[in-house]
Length: 120
Image 1 (cartoon, rainbow, N blue to C red):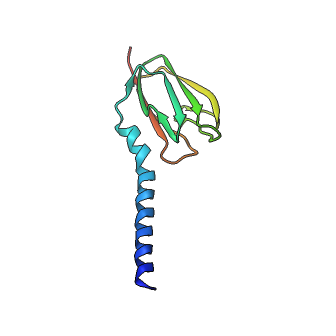
Image 2: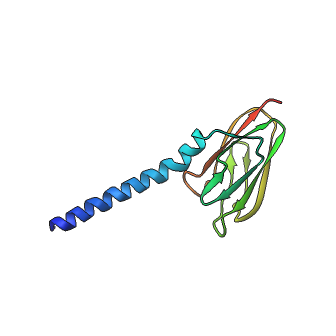
Image 3: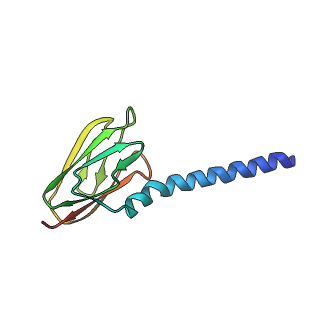
């Protein structure tokens, strides 16, 4: 293989490896590191992310997930609740017990979020 082809192959493999690492760690790390938005009750699924990635609410509050990613379907899944796959519309869940609830979109690896529920 000519030297220029070998160099191009190395550059391509390096770029693909960096891209794969960014896809695997980006949103996942963002939700885990994000400071929760306080008293925010609406989370939007768009651009393959939950915005905001973390919210903090008092116990007894309902969170609404709005699906606004055009024709790309998303869902919300966690222990204790699960939405349908939706491209538009919304899903709601009431959080009565304090704790931290991590959730995912099972259709898109790395699309995660977190709800922190505090006592009233």
